[in-house]
Length: 232
Image 1 (tube, helix red, strand yellow):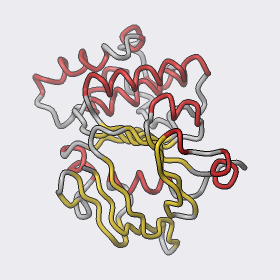
Image 2 (cartoon, one colour; image 1 turned 135 degrees about the horizontal axis):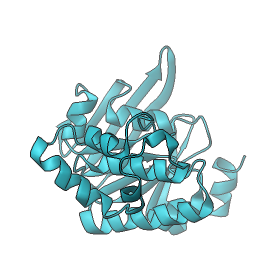
Image 3 (tube, rainbow, N blue to C red; image 1 turned 90 degrees about the vertical axis):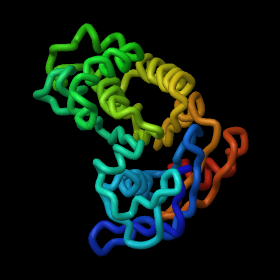
Image 4 (cartoon, rainbow, N blue to C red; image 1 turned 135 degrees about the vertical axis):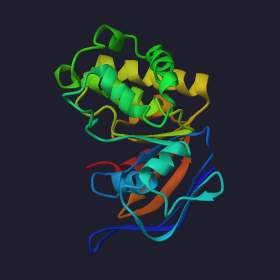
C-alpha cells in the first residue's frame, strides 16, 4: 500500500501541500483531480522524491520513504512519468529506454526493452531515432515506456494527455488499461481530461488548495462537485 499521513510539502517558503492523508492499494487505479495550481504535481513530485516532505510521512509497502532518494524509491517500485514527458531529446528511443533500465543488470536490459515495447509497437519503428524528433504522442509513449523499464509496482503519471491528438489519447488509455491488466501495477493519474481519466481509473481523489476535499468511486463524482472544484 502507498500511504500518506499528514503530508506537508513546500516550494521554498511557500507551503503547497497542507496535511494530506491518502492511501491506495498497489494495484488500484486512482485519478488525482483538481484545478491548475492546487498541488497535484507537487504531490507526485513528493512521492517520487524530487521535493522533500516538510512534515508527515510517505510509506510504500510499510517502508517509510521520507529520507529515500528518487533512485531508491524507483528501486522500491515507484515510477514517474512527468508532465511534459521530459525524455532526453538527443537520445534515441533505445537510449532513453536504456536510461530507464539503469538499475537493471546489463544482460537484462534488452529483454526488458522487448517486453515494454510489446505495449508500444509504434516505437519499434523509431527505435534508433532521436526522441526529440518524435511526435508528442510518441514522446508520451516513450516516457511511459521508460518508466516501465524499472519493473514498477506503481506508476505515477502527470497529465499524460497534454498536447496530444485525441486519437492518440484514446490509444494511450487502452494501453494503460492493458498494462494494468497484464502487470497488475497501480496507477496514480493526474489529469484534467475527465473522460480520459475515467476510461482508466475506478476511483478519484480531488484536491483544492493543497488538501483533499473529496474522494470516492468514479460514479460518485457529481456535477455539483465538478462545478465547485473543477470548472474554471
